[in-house]
Image (cartoon, rainbow, N blue to C red; front, side, top):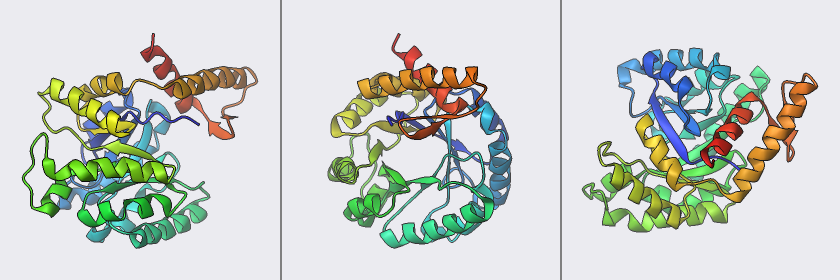
Length: 284
């Protein structure tokens, strides 16, 4: 099944107004954040806000992911306890360095899924260190849950001891390697954020560079960046055909009073239908 991963929009999990506003956004993935955007003293509150938001999953147009805290933080078990529930489409794991980190997280997720009678929830691994870059292929291929690698440029540069710039030379090799490793493992790659919200031309050019490197989309931090990124990562023929299949199949399912059905062996529901409509509208 074709995936729409042009935009992965991070939304601070401790801001109830932003969580509410996210219902109207047209990013392909809205990712509620428990990590960098949430101060240590607000982690518990953010978990509760996200837990409540997931109960209203049907009101969101986008796929809904949650970014946990990093494996090194010691907070992932607390994060998963609250967010592994019906309504979450995927988990973003930041600062992944090794396979062992993924395996430990997968074990925790499996226990919660069995207890709560949930289907396996997919994960995206964010590569943000020199060790992570070296192990990127192994990380991408170590689990069926891993659907994509995400490039995290800021922590990588910090690991290298290099100052950030809009065209950081220290990140050139790593940025090019991650989509190669992801593709070799049969997974997607999503590029790093563009920090300067006022530099729209810079965002567009950076997105073009990412697309030419093999990334299917970009991480973003503001709703105003969605349209720019979507313009660059224009839907492929496979994505367009998938959207048409979803619309036709789901329309038929609704006529037969069914709430969900399948396309190419994968379950689809109202969220996928809305996503398909958005995609087809974007190419008119």
